Amino acid sequence: MRRNRKRSKLRISAHAARERETLTIPLWWLNSIIALFLLPLAGIWTKTFLTCFTRATFQHHFWASEEFWFFALGAVLWVIAFFGLPRPLWIYVFGHELTHALWVWMMGGRVSQFRVSSDGGHIISNKHNFWIALAPYFFPLYSIGVIALYGIAGFFWNLEPYHRWLYALIGVTWAFHISFTLWMIPKGQTDLTYYGTFFSLVMIYLMNLLVLTALLIIASPHVTLVSFARELLRNAESFSTLVCTNVAALRRS
Image 1 (tube, rainbow, N blue to C red):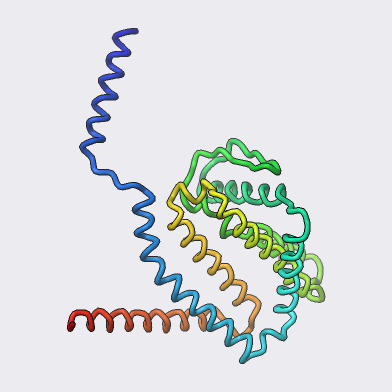
Image 2: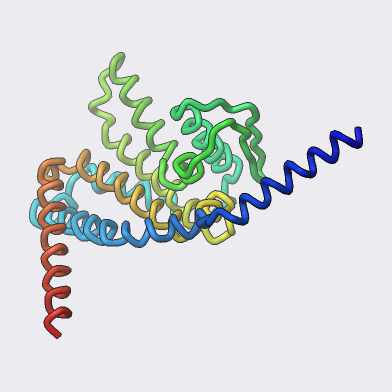
């Protein structure tokens, strides 16, 4: 027994020595650098979204459509409920942990434990990465569930007369997702700190903006994937020209 212990200590000491000789970069530091390079993309995408939304809303009167009004109605009703009624924490926690589990399964992992209560929850899995950790903050599970159920039901019944209620439910569930996300982020979630808070916040913003873009393209007949891509490319070229001009000016000075 003593001999085995001695060998174990020697192995640990040798491993510690090798670690001291190896230069290691903290994960949060590396992710923060990646997040800095993602900031221009976030700015370009935000400008593109606002341009397309404003153009569709005022030039093509998207604001007067049923899609816009029923989505807005659902969102407003949820915001009133969020601030005026007891918050359904169990429903949020269940969706949060289920989203973790779904992304583990999508990436080929296994979930061995799933725990949910109104005080919190957790899953235990054999796979972990930043997509799995951050998924509940940008993946509106209940909105996607509503769309999926509507699509499945559409195979059996004619739901066209009720499409306006689909947008109302999407408004409710998307506002549910955003309100709880904004409410939970300042509470020191380990999902965010594990890969670096700055990196996590940039990724969450970008992915939620991507979801909003998808909703805009689906709801507005005047914003298509092609038109949005063209506007995005135009803004990217403008940003690139601005950067090159400023760099050239700095070199001349």
